[in-house]
Image (cartoon, rainbow, N blue to C red; front, side, top):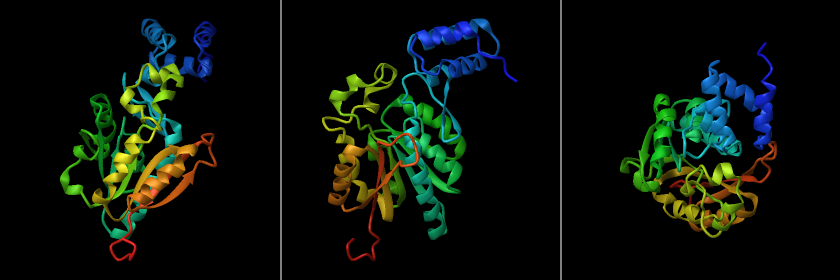
Length: 276
């Protein structure tokens, strides 16, 4: 059995505001590989406020250990709902088409959604893109070994033109924090993650509007766009999808602690659908 964490280390972490100090102490000690000098360096960084995941160099997401690095958006457990929904739709698309589904993880950050899809949806043709070069670097570490291709650029501009009109699953964890609320976020986020990964504009949905506006051009007939929002933003997000020619439905995290999380799924009608 592993030794109990050093009480002095636990006390230092707790004094720094770490709620789960015992668990963090164990993780930091394991990361230091029994080197006291290395452990002290990690603890100093954590006590100074760096996110635990960045200090460790990895984040746990849906049972996967994903590489993260300073400045990257750390995957949130609430986004596991979006990842699971995307994987399920991709799996069904592969089955129905008789070929690997084309999946895009847009605004991919470290590539958490794409990694879950690659691991759980069966064979897929996976693409990912982000505007932030730090995120792109982390996503390549996580997705290229899983067969994904990662591109740097602004939304659809980053994607190969050959996937236009052919995407079966477009999963987007775009920033949706209203600008005025960024100052209220935990310091681990607002001080250590790129603002571009957090700031969603006045109502938090600026990037969602841009994504939805061009979604029909990129989705295959019958393809789906999935976007994460908060409960209070979800109706507006659904209206954006209707205005963009998609059929929306909402998936809520009823069975998790993230009861404010909603995934809005917009389906592009098939070509044979008289509404399309």
